[in-house]
Length: 87
Image (tube, rainbow, N blue to C red; front, side, top):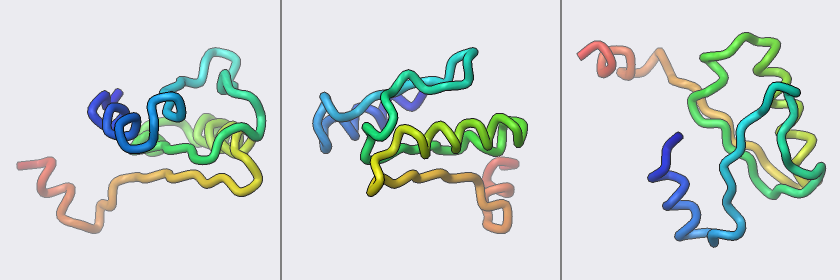
């Protein structure tokens, strides 16, 4: 959990609009369908089995409003990042 990122978002967006949640054993997010403007998934997908990645992205889509957006990032291994990690 990147508490610094959550604090930054709360400060710049508003604390009542920023939540950190985890997918539970049921595979679903504890969020109402169509209730979120934005979902982030930062440096997670590359660490989980493709089945669970699809489940996560499906849930993200479910909770987003029709005009909502998802931001998902993964490392760019064609960049200098692998060298930085090695060093």
